[in-house]
Length: 387
Image (cartoon, helix red, strand yellow):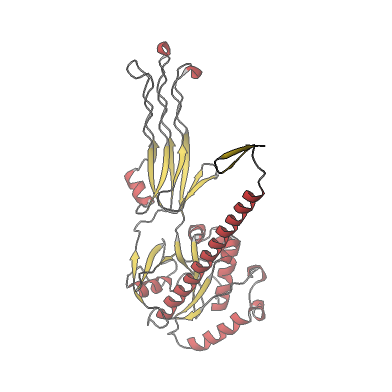
């Protein structure tokens, strides 16, 4: 069993996960008609991924959210070729999706140093433009953050996700007996004794209809897209959002969570998943857990308990089902070990697949080289044979 030394907790404060900005490339410089001089090109505007940046920092530093590159220098007698305008680089966090005003995806920044051009600078004045400069490109850009984490916690409100993160991190996120305690994502990092790290995202609780943007809706679901594993967290006693909504058993909760993921984006169901059954310290929890395990092993025998339109096309097969209590700490070490085991297995599979792909590419390259017809000049040793 792998034991963890600690889990570091990172809180974002007033969390911002999307930003609408204005970007404009620099105008070109004036040409010099009499001497045929060309003005300098205007600078470009780029978004660049930085590891320690947040959208909130960007918004606070640039409240107007306007980013304009420098203009190109005019052509003059002492410098007929005007110098280029300086580019403007907008620092953004890793995990940003960049879209234009029409929702068209321009690109994604998935690792530190990634960069995307969002507004081109105008050309300097030259003969083709009658020595008049062109203005830079103007665009409205949307920056949308999707958190990148190894594990995303999935559960309805009050399933105990915040309590679980608090237990394994010794941090104190807001915890209370009402729905939507977590209103913004929280990122934590499990630190293992061998220096292995696993990042965990505690995301706002789902409700039925989240795929239609009810409750936190898409604000939650978009963040789960870039997590490598899903950790379902359910209350063994079931869940009821309010007196006006249906009571759901733990089994029904799992089915409904699966359906919400499916309706938002089917690809989410292909992610490896584990199940943490929380609040096992409550009375009759053991009996309810045995009942839940029977339902999970024979789910089709119990689907008649759920409305037909809420039954997913595909049921989640959990790699591990771990009974836990975030209050007493029971099962927490086993949960950490299972997360480590699953992520290590996934990393091994991805490494094997990468090596196989490299080998296939090498074999294909060699085969093409072997079958390639001889060129007009074939070199053998130091002699050239003309064909």
